[in-house]
Length: 216
Image (cartoon, rainbow, N blue to C red; front, side, top):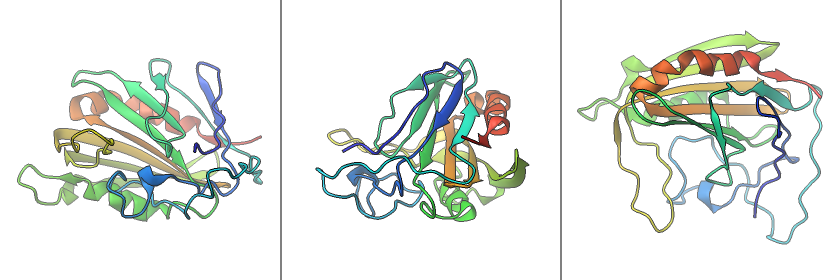
C-alpha cells in the first residue's frame, strides 16, 4: 500500500501535500523491523487495513510545503514507501542521494531528536562516536524554523532491501540535513553520500533549503 503523495511535474518547483495524518508507514519503516533504516525519522502509528480508502489531502494554516529543486539534481521514484521524494546527485566522490520524508502533524519526532539519530549513524574510522564532526544550526527560512545538520565519518544508516545483503558501512561519507518545522508537521531533507560529493553540493543543498516555504 502506498501513502498518498502528490509530486509536482514541473522540472524545478516542487509542491508536495501529504495525506491527513500520514502516519501510514509500511513495514519498511516499522518499529523493530529489520528493513527500517536506523536513525531515520520515527514512524507514526501502524497503517490501516490494506483495503482502506486513503484520506483526502490535509489542509493546514500555512498550506503544503514547497521547495525548488536544483536544476542538476535528478528526481527518481522513491525507493521506499516512506519517502515522498528522492533525488540523485553526481559528484567527485560518486553519487549521493537526497531523501525527503513527511509524516503529518505531530508525527516523526522533534527536530533535535531526529538530528541526534542522524548523528548516531556516523562513527570515526575506529568505530568511536563522531560527535566532534556533528554540527547543527537553527535558521528562519521564510518564516519556518529549519534545523540544519551536518556530519561526516563512516555511515551505517543504509536501508536494507528484502532479498539483498544488508548494507555495509560506508567510509568517508557525509550528511547534510534540514528539518523544517512547517505548519503541517516536520519535513525531513537528508542528503547523504561520499564526503567529496556532498561537500561539493553544499551550495545547491542550501539553495534548496532557502527556497522552502509554506503556502497553498
